[in-house]
Each structure stands twice: as structure tokens, then as C-alpha cells.
Amino acid sequence: MIDGAGVDRKALEALFGWYEAIGVDAVVLDAPVDRFRAPSPAAPSIDRRSPTRLPAGEAPPAAPLAAPSVSGERSRGSEVDEVMQARAEAARAATLEDLHRILDQFEGCALRQTARQLVFSDGNPAGRLMLIGEAPGREEDAQGKPFVGRSGQLLDRMLAAIGLDRSTAYIANVVPWRPPGNRTPSPLETEICKPFIARQIELAEPDVLVFLGGAAAKAITGSTEGILRARGKWSTYRAGGREIACMATLHPAYLLRQPAQKRLAWRDFLAIRNRLEGAE
Image (cartoon, rainbow, N blue to C red):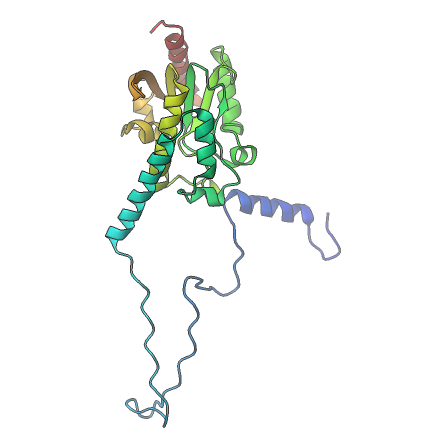
């Protein structure tokens, strides 16, 4: 449809949707503007015929003020403070409801400023299986629930294949806010959010913990192995005095890009079912 101004509205709406998906959140002008420094007044002209002399009665132009520097030590100290604040806030939660409320009010992570809403969890917190991804995407940010887009639909089918669904499993992410444009969370953002997902695991008390993708496994266990080497291996995660059987498997988004690898994920999910049934 083209309006009176000759604008294709459907094309324009599609363009805006694409901008939103890649994280565009500001309009720029034709010429660049440095918004971090106030515009300085024009310097008085100097008589170029005599470099050492100025017009009568005119003072030399003031040297521009140097921007205050922030030392590396101060930056690191500020980051440590943010992580320590997150640990203290997470420790206050006595229940999952407490943790949800605390996270919803937590302002120590900049991601909450760009996300639509907190994506805390979905499924049954009393379920014996807990699955953890890295961070929400666009659909998750819109609905406020993890794994509801294409990846989530595949995850639902994977769970159904072993006789489970969201009424018998609990789903969360390491980072509960969507990074702009679905970018990878920064190391600092992940570090700030880690105390909250650790407390979430403690309060949910699952019998089996599954990390969906290498990023989630690395954030929670510190594993440095690539996901193709790490997947399918049982280990132990200690939380709140309990030892929880845990395993990393391939992320559903990866499986959508590499469908031939679904056979590996199927092996992992069979092993998960056997562990839940006490066969391993």
C-alpha cells in the first residue's frame, strides 16, 4: 500500500521491525554529533600575519579542558562493586518469588535499561529437571518467558520426545534480560547475573541440571571445553549443600542451523531421561 506521500507503509513497517530486531534505539542526523562533550564556543581568530601577536585587546584562546580520565583501577573497582552488590541481593532471596521480585527491582545491570522486561523463568519450579540457556531473544523479551521463539518450539518437541513438557520441567537463563540486537552478553553482564541464576538453582532444587549451549555451561561451571566436546558428559554441580547431576547439550538455536546434529542432542536427551528414571 502506498499513501499519498508515495510511501510504502508495509515496507516501512518491515524496515522498522528490522531496526528493532538488530537493536537500533536512536535516530542519527546527517552529520555526526559527539553527545558526550558539550559544544565549545568558537575560538577567537588570530592574526595569521604575526603568529606571536593577537589583535589589540584580545586575550589568547583558552586551551580546551581535558576530559577527566578514569583509571583502570577505578573501573575495575566499580565492576567489583556491581558484582558484589548482585551477590548480596541474590543472597537475600528466601524463595523463588523473592528472587523474582529482587531481580525485577535490581538496577545493577545495564541490560535492564534496554530490555522490554525481565525474563525470569517458565515451567514448573518443582520439576525435577531444570534447563538453562544463555539469554533471552526478541520473542522472549516480548513475552517475558524463556524459550518461546523458534528455539523454544524445538525445545518443546525435544522435551516431548522424552515424555516431558513445561509442566514437568523448569526453564531459565543465565542472563534474564535481552541484550540489544541479540548480541552476546558481555563478560561483566554475565558476571553480574551469575549470582542470581546460582541462587535460582539453589531455590529450585532440581535433580538434574541441563545447560543449553556452551555459553551457559561456561558461565555456571567454568568449563572451557567447546560444546561439541563437552556435551553428553555427566558431572556434578554443588548448590546449597546439594550435589546435582548436570550435563551440557546443544542449544536448540544451533540445531536449527545444523539439523544434522540433532542426533547428538537426541542421545543427550535419552541420557537425561534415563538419569531422571534412575537408570544412570
